[in-house]
Amino acid sequence: MTMSTALLTDHYELTMLQAALRSGAAHRKAVFEVFARHLPGGRRYGVVAGIGRVLDELERFRFGEEELTYLRENHVVDESTLEFLAGYRFSGSVHGYREGDLYFPASPIMVVEGTFAEAVLLETLILSILNHDCAIASAASRMANAAGKRPLIEMGSRRTHEWAAVAAARAAYIAGFASTSNLMAGRIFGVPTAGTAAHAFTLLHDSERAAFEAQIASLGPETTLLVDTYDVAQAVRTAVELAGPELGAVRIDSGDLAAAAQEVREQLDALGAFDTRILVTSDLDEYAIAALAAAPVDGYGVGTSLVTGSGVPTAALVYKLVARETATGKLEPVAKRSVGKPSRGGRKEAYRLLDETGHAETELVTTSGHVPEGGIPLLHPLVRDGEVVGRESLDAARERHAAAVALLPVEALHLGRGYAAIPTEFA
Image 1: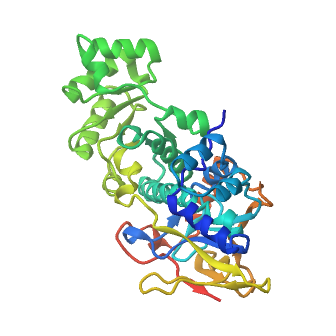
Image 2: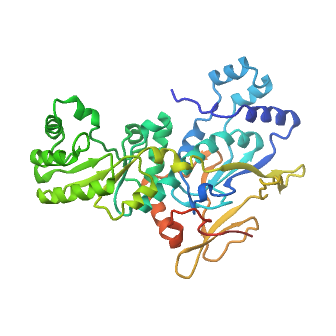
Image 3: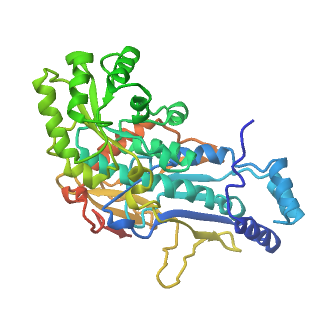
């Protein structure tokens, strides 16, 4: 039985619905938009991730008997509202930026159109997915840029909520990570999985040699041996002695990683293991990865920093009503005007403008219907008349991300705090 996502929401979404049903405004057409007023953490760009997960969860947003019974027994809403919820099906449309693309302040990442009753109920679900996944993907992209062509494995499952770990692995893969340690991410989303052994495996055996012998016998000489349980130099000697020059890789998980990698590379080469790779882990983030650029490292494993957004665990996205149907049937712009949290009314379109060298120059957001010459349209149909039409593969999102980053000006890849890489202009 497919689990409903209808209660992955806030109490006040349903009380707003109840009051709007009573006032008669619930069935007015409405347009909501997801956007960020700023890029948190001084980031230069954000990465769109989680669109596919939103589409999956939207299809399961149904109020069945269990959900209705809970709401009735806890007096959340009245009987007429429960009757409406029993037949709830989103029948509107959703447009959005494609996964893997970039966004900037005020980019209308997602546009939800339907009746107020249909659209308002989706706010919490959409924001909870996009705020998490966009934050993880944005951090992962910075790490991938710092790593260059060296592969990254996501290995943060033990540092976050069990299902957040699955979503994080998916978002990281979109933004350039090569694989994940999380098997559920492999099963559900097809993210490549990888992993060999932890220190516990070495400690279990009577000696490090015995542990290496067992791992090689089981996984072959191309396996990755963890060499810092005891003495690194001795472990490397033992590893090459047992696996030969065909040893796949060694992993270092502690100490001064740059110095250790240099020493291990020299030792491996002296032992004839020229093709044995060196992988490093141990609380890496984008800054640590960048600091290892000159070290003889062949790959990185990133855990805690990745699944927590490297200090920026939310994308600061909001879901705001920007247009509503009037009594005469026209759609008029509406906007919040409070100090510090203003928004722009009107249903938006968005385009990315390139300069004469083919690099991104401007994010143009328009309510006028103007289509700029040469502008790359950023909003695409995701849901039409309640039916999902915008699904695509993770590989497509991954390729899109690489292409989008390649169009950024060079300063966008700087790790220091700064302003958005390109300005957002309105027309």
